[in-house]
Length: 568
Image (cartoon, rainbow, N blue to C red; front, side, top):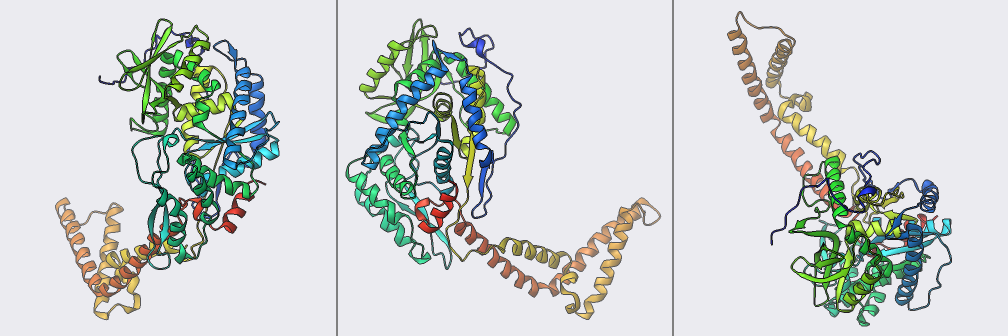
């Protein structure tokens, strides 16, 4: 069956239609970018203002009167937090291999990311999370987005750092197809176990002792217990955070999506899918227009329609075949039919008018039968911000996405969207051969080379041979003539003569420059060789000063001081 995108239909007859709001804040393109300078941090709003934002969000939710399928949003938030904190305590106890005390605070701050060995600018969010939670007497919760497709099988390491720097990929697993992190196991134990030593060996020339020494043994122990790959990587990261004093709770999105609270969220959305889909595509179109995006797949594709089946913002797969597929739904009477991209597989006793109790039981049965229903990018943060947290911390990419989530929340649920913190940073590996002035020298040399081609007399000066000085005088005369023409003077008795003299002037200037350039040829060669060296240094700088290197490559003394400064 062909999948097509249907036009927006303004005459949707749906119980949620009266909650559609089109009057929200003016949408302007945001340019979020962190400086490439070592130690730079981007925080929007400023970290000093986050306490006020946190208080504002809590006040906003306290005064919210939104009702969702017969329950108030306030009650749903309490239920969600109670259930997910229990799950987070259980999971964190598992990866620590020791009991974790359930926090008593009623405040909750969250961040989230895929279970990658990500770069330090991403890791910084976890330290800001821990620091803010301590200051505001809230609970810090890191959501592990293991429902995303597996996107990393190793890390890039800088090698030959004292000669001609390049990057080398050091793998810890073999590449597979589009399968979610939560279903991915350690497929090559020998490769995984050797990863820490292989990284250290690759970095030996740089004399950096990487964090991998300290944290990889924990990942290896988890792999020997046959834990999923995402858990093994999480254990390594969480070990370093605890070693430095963080006490953040951890919770995979796979466990979130299997919770009763998330299933309520799911049931509400799919039972109002015509309305939600229209708003989703509407907001996506506005985002693309505001940001000048022409791609039909960026930042996310539209939700499509297929012969009465509506694409929902959720993934589905069965554990017998773990490739993620879009979940399609169709309302038929008081039932909602569910289909993967290929064929129907279940139905729920659910409609906009029905409470979801029966469908919650049916979803549990589907889970027991191996079916997995998971959130996609926007619904992950929509749930985390609306149902769960008092404050969410985004990186730059997530913050751009959530410009759409803000408007979806306002238009679909009829509530003001809570503010979030955008946080990222830049930290360089301590590779001392980088040249911070190379870019300035490149521009200077390029200008000098251009002058040698078009104005060689400027560069050669007194070293210009005597026989060439008359050419310089002639060139200056021609230039003065050109300037008079540009000021409006006509040369000769006719337009034809004026044009002829212009052509002759252009030809003669070109001849003179060519003659002068021949004299400067040796100088051009010298500058070109120097320019090539500087360009090579700039290429080296891009490798040596990249902000994208995994946190496991850094020496502990540098990264610990940088990260812990963010908790103050």
